Length: 246
Image (cartoon, rainbow, N blue to C red; front, side):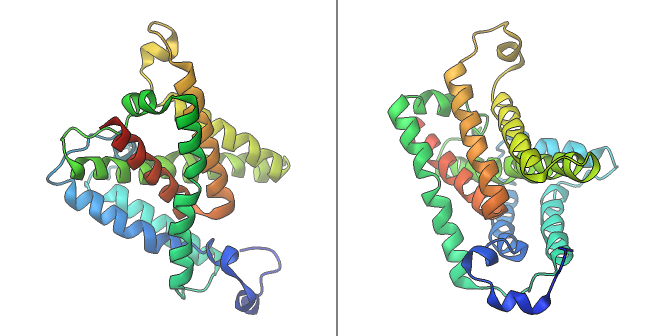
Protein backbone atom coordinates (compact mmCIF):
# COMPACT_ATOMS: atom_id res chain seq x y z
CA UNK A 1 0.00 0.00 0.00
CA UNK A 2 1.40 3.45 -0.86
CA UNK A 3 2.59 5.52 2.04
CA UNK A 4 0.08 8.14 3.08
CA UNK A 5 -2.76 6.39 1.26
CA UNK A 6 -6.06 8.25 1.27
CA UNK A 7 -9.10 6.61 -0.33
CA UNK A 8 -10.74 10.00 -0.99
CA UNK A 9 -7.74 11.17 -2.99
CA UNK A 10 -8.82 8.91 -5.87
CA UNK A 11 -11.74 11.26 -6.50
CA UNK A 12 -9.30 13.88 -7.75
CA UNK A 13 -7.39 11.56 -10.05
CA UNK A 14 -7.28 12.54 -13.70
CA UNK A 15 -6.53 10.62 -16.86
CA UNK A 16 -2.83 9.99 -16.23
CA UNK A 17 -3.40 8.61 -12.72
CA UNK A 18 -6.32 6.43 -13.80
CA UNK A 19 -4.38 4.85 -16.65
CA UNK A 20 -2.15 3.33 -13.97
CA UNK A 21 -5.05 1.53 -12.31
CA UNK A 22 -4.39 -2.18 -12.98
CA UNK A 23 -8.11 -2.71 -13.59
CA UNK A 24 -7.85 -0.70 -16.82
CA UNK A 25 -4.88 -2.78 -17.96
CA UNK A 26 -6.83 -5.90 -17.04
CA UNK A 27 -9.78 -4.77 -19.15
CA UNK A 28 -7.51 -4.41 -22.18
CA UNK A 29 -5.26 -7.44 -21.64
CA UNK A 30 -7.87 -10.07 -20.75
CA UNK A 31 -9.64 -9.99 -24.17
CA UNK A 32 -6.26 -10.11 -25.93
CA UNK A 33 -5.29 -13.20 -23.94
CA UNK A 34 -8.66 -14.80 -24.62
CA UNK A 35 -8.33 -14.15 -28.34
CA UNK A 36 -4.74 -15.41 -28.48
CA UNK A 37 -5.38 -18.68 -26.66
CA UNK A 38 -8.75 -19.51 -28.22
CA UNK A 39 -7.60 -18.79 -31.76
CA UNK A 40 -4.31 -20.48 -30.94
CA UNK A 41 -6.17 -23.78 -30.64
CA UNK A 42 -6.44 -23.70 -34.44
CA UNK A 43 -3.31 -21.72 -35.38
CA UNK A 44 -0.09 -22.71 -33.61
CA UNK A 45 2.12 -19.63 -33.30
CA UNK A 46 5.06 -21.39 -31.58
CA UNK A 47 6.02 -18.22 -29.69
CA UNK A 48 8.85 -18.09 -27.19
CA UNK A 49 7.08 -15.89 -24.61
CA UNK A 50 4.14 -18.17 -23.76
CA UNK A 51 6.48 -21.16 -23.76
CA UNK A 52 8.80 -19.53 -21.22
CA UNK A 53 5.90 -18.65 -18.92
CA UNK A 54 4.55 -22.19 -19.31
CA UNK A 55 7.95 -23.67 -18.48
CA UNK A 56 8.22 -21.45 -15.41
CA UNK A 57 4.84 -22.66 -14.19
CA UNK A 58 5.82 -26.23 -15.05
CA UNK A 59 8.58 -26.11 -12.44
CA UNK A 60 5.82 -25.81 -9.86
CA UNK A 61 3.81 -28.65 -11.36
CA UNK A 62 1.29 -26.41 -13.15
CA UNK A 63 1.17 -27.61 -16.75
CA UNK A 64 -2.32 -26.71 -17.98
CA UNK A 65 -2.26 -24.73 -21.21
CA UNK A 66 -4.48 -21.92 -19.91
CA UNK A 67 -2.35 -21.18 -16.83
CA UNK A 68 0.07 -18.65 -18.44
CA UNK A 69 -2.89 -16.44 -19.36
CA UNK A 70 -4.47 -16.95 -15.95
CA UNK A 71 -1.21 -15.97 -14.28
CA UNK A 72 -1.18 -12.57 -16.03
CA UNK A 73 -4.82 -11.94 -15.12
CA UNK A 74 -4.21 -12.90 -11.49
CA UNK A 75 -1.11 -10.69 -11.23
CA UNK A 76 -3.01 -7.66 -12.54
CA UNK A 77 -5.96 -8.34 -10.22
CA UNK A 78 -3.58 -8.78 -7.29
CA UNK A 79 -1.87 -5.47 -8.10
CA UNK A 80 -5.27 -3.78 -8.17
CA UNK A 81 -6.09 -5.17 -4.73
CA UNK A 82 -2.70 -4.22 -3.26
CA UNK A 83 -2.91 -0.66 -4.59
CA UNK A 84 -6.50 -0.34 -3.38
CA UNK A 85 -7.39 1.62 -6.47
CA UNK A 86 -11.09 1.94 -7.32
CA UNK A 87 -12.52 -0.86 -9.46
CA UNK A 88 -14.58 1.68 -11.41
CA UNK A 89 -13.92 1.45 -15.12
CA UNK A 90 -13.63 4.68 -17.10
CA UNK A 91 -14.23 4.03 -20.84
CA UNK A 92 -12.56 7.30 -21.94
CA UNK A 93 -9.44 6.23 -20.04
CA UNK A 94 -9.40 2.86 -21.80
CA UNK A 95 -9.87 4.56 -25.18
CA UNK A 96 -7.05 6.97 -24.37
CA UNK A 97 -4.72 4.10 -23.45
CA UNK A 98 -5.39 2.44 -26.79
CA UNK A 99 -4.71 5.75 -28.53
CA UNK A 100 -1.46 6.14 -26.60
CA UNK A 101 -0.39 2.67 -27.68
CA UNK A 102 -0.60 3.78 -31.30
CA UNK A 103 1.03 7.16 -30.75
CA UNK A 104 3.99 5.75 -28.82
CA UNK A 105 4.70 3.36 -31.71
CA UNK A 106 5.15 6.17 -34.22
CA UNK A 107 8.72 7.06 -33.08
CA UNK A 108 9.80 3.43 -33.59
CA UNK A 109 8.20 3.30 -37.04
CA UNK A 110 9.96 6.54 -37.92
CA UNK A 111 13.35 5.26 -36.73
CA UNK A 112 12.83 1.98 -38.56
CA UNK A 113 12.01 3.76 -41.79
CA UNK A 114 14.81 6.31 -41.56
CA UNK A 115 17.52 3.77 -40.72
CA UNK A 116 16.24 1.20 -43.20
CA UNK A 117 16.31 -1.53 -40.56
CA UNK A 118 12.60 -2.34 -40.67
CA UNK A 119 12.69 -5.22 -43.13
CA UNK A 120 15.64 -6.90 -41.41
CA UNK A 121 14.01 -6.55 -38.00
CA UNK A 122 10.80 -8.08 -39.27
CA UNK A 123 12.72 -11.00 -40.79
CA UNK A 124 14.74 -11.71 -37.64
CA UNK A 125 11.98 -11.17 -35.08
CA UNK A 126 10.98 -14.20 -33.04
CA UNK A 127 7.26 -13.40 -33.20
CA UNK A 128 6.69 -15.24 -36.48
CA UNK A 129 3.61 -17.24 -37.27
CA UNK A 130 3.96 -20.82 -38.50
CA UNK A 131 0.80 -20.33 -40.60
CA UNK A 132 0.33 -17.87 -43.44
CA UNK A 133 -2.52 -15.42 -43.48
CA UNK A 134 -3.76 -12.51 -41.46
CA UNK A 135 -4.92 -14.57 -38.46
CA UNK A 136 -1.49 -16.06 -37.89
CA UNK A 137 0.08 -12.61 -38.18
CA UNK A 138 -2.34 -11.07 -35.71
CA UNK A 139 -1.96 -13.98 -33.27
CA UNK A 140 1.84 -13.74 -33.37
CA UNK A 141 1.71 -9.99 -32.84
CA UNK A 142 -0.71 -10.18 -29.91
CA UNK A 143 0.97 -13.14 -28.20
CA UNK A 144 4.47 -11.70 -28.46
CA UNK A 145 3.28 -8.28 -27.31
CA UNK A 146 1.50 -9.55 -24.21
CA UNK A 147 3.93 -12.23 -23.08
CA UNK A 148 7.19 -10.45 -23.87
CA UNK A 149 6.00 -7.37 -22.00
CA UNK A 150 4.92 -9.56 -19.10
CA UNK A 151 8.31 -11.28 -18.90
CA UNK A 152 10.73 -8.48 -19.76
CA UNK A 153 8.84 -5.58 -18.23
CA UNK A 154 6.37 -6.60 -15.54
CA UNK A 155 8.32 -9.54 -14.11
CA UNK A 156 11.94 -8.61 -14.77
CA UNK A 157 11.75 -4.88 -14.04
CA UNK A 158 9.53 -5.27 -10.98
CA UNK A 159 11.61 -8.04 -9.39
CA UNK A 160 15.02 -6.45 -9.93
CA UNK A 161 13.86 -2.99 -8.85
CA UNK A 162 12.46 -4.62 -5.71
CA UNK A 163 15.84 -6.21 -4.99
CA UNK A 164 17.91 -3.11 -5.75
CA UNK A 165 15.70 -0.47 -4.15
CA UNK A 166 13.86 -2.22 -1.32
CA UNK A 167 16.46 -4.85 -0.38
CA UNK A 168 19.81 -3.30 -1.34
CA UNK A 169 18.67 0.23 -0.48
CA UNK A 170 19.66 1.88 -3.76
CA UNK A 171 17.78 4.91 -5.05
CA UNK A 172 14.58 3.81 -6.76
CA UNK A 173 14.90 6.19 -9.73
CA UNK A 174 18.47 5.07 -10.45
CA UNK A 175 17.57 1.42 -10.00
CA UNK A 176 14.57 1.75 -12.30
CA UNK A 177 16.57 3.38 -15.10
CA UNK A 178 19.28 0.73 -14.85
CA UNK A 179 16.81 -2.15 -14.88
CA UNK A 180 14.77 -0.74 -17.78
CA UNK A 181 17.91 -0.61 -19.93
CA UNK A 182 19.10 -4.04 -18.75
CA UNK A 183 15.73 -5.61 -19.52
CA UNK A 184 15.78 -3.96 -22.96
CA UNK A 185 19.20 -5.45 -23.75
CA UNK A 186 18.04 -8.91 -22.70
CA UNK A 187 14.88 -8.43 -24.74
CA UNK A 188 16.94 -7.58 -27.82
CA UNK A 189 19.28 -10.54 -27.27
CA UNK A 190 16.37 -13.01 -27.13
CA UNK A 191 15.51 -12.22 -30.75
CA UNK A 192 18.75 -13.78 -32.01
CA UNK A 193 20.24 -17.26 -32.06
CA UNK A 194 22.84 -18.56 -29.65
CA UNK A 195 25.35 -18.76 -32.48
CA UNK A 196 24.85 -15.07 -33.26
CA UNK A 197 25.16 -14.06 -29.61
CA UNK A 198 28.34 -16.09 -29.08
CA UNK A 199 30.01 -14.88 -32.29
CA UNK A 200 29.79 -18.20 -34.13
CA UNK A 201 27.54 -16.58 -36.71
CA UNK A 202 27.33 -12.98 -37.96
CA UNK A 203 25.50 -10.74 -35.51
CA UNK A 204 23.26 -8.02 -37.01
CA UNK A 205 24.17 -5.36 -34.48
CA UNK A 206 22.02 -2.66 -36.06
CA UNK A 207 18.94 -4.82 -35.53
CA UNK A 208 19.99 -5.65 -31.99
CA UNK A 209 20.47 -1.98 -31.12
CA UNK A 210 17.10 -1.09 -32.62
CA UNK A 211 15.34 -3.79 -30.59
CA UNK A 212 17.14 -2.62 -27.44
CA UNK A 213 15.92 0.92 -28.14
CA UNK A 214 12.39 -0.40 -28.63
CA UNK A 215 12.67 -2.37 -25.40
CA UNK A 216 13.81 0.75 -23.56
CA UNK A 217 10.78 2.66 -24.85
CA UNK A 218 8.41 -0.12 -23.79
CA UNK A 219 10.12 -0.36 -20.42
CA UNK A 220 9.64 3.36 -19.85
CA UNK A 221 6.01 3.04 -20.93
CA UNK A 222 5.49 0.20 -18.46
CA UNK A 223 6.95 2.24 -15.60
CA UNK A 224 5.26 5.56 -16.35
CA UNK A 225 2.19 4.73 -18.46
CA UNK A 226 1.22 1.26 -17.30
CA UNK A 227 1.35 -2.33 -18.52
CA UNK A 228 -1.44 -2.10 -21.11
CA UNK A 229 0.08 0.88 -22.94
CA UNK A 230 3.43 -0.93 -23.21
CA UNK A 231 1.67 -4.07 -24.47
CA UNK A 232 -0.44 -2.09 -26.92
CA UNK A 233 2.55 -0.27 -28.39
CA UNK A 234 4.42 -3.56 -28.72
CA UNK A 235 1.47 -5.17 -30.54
CA UNK A 236 1.07 -2.24 -32.92
CA UNK A 237 4.77 -2.39 -33.73
CA UNK A 238 4.60 -6.17 -34.31
CA UNK A 239 1.65 -5.78 -36.66
CA UNK A 240 3.42 -3.04 -38.58
CA UNK A 241 6.70 -4.94 -38.84
CA UNK A 242 5.05 -8.17 -39.97
CA UNK A 243 2.86 -6.29 -42.43
CA UNK A 244 5.96 -4.67 -43.92
CA UNK A 245 7.56 -8.08 -44.19
CA UNK A 246 4.62 -9.14 -46.32
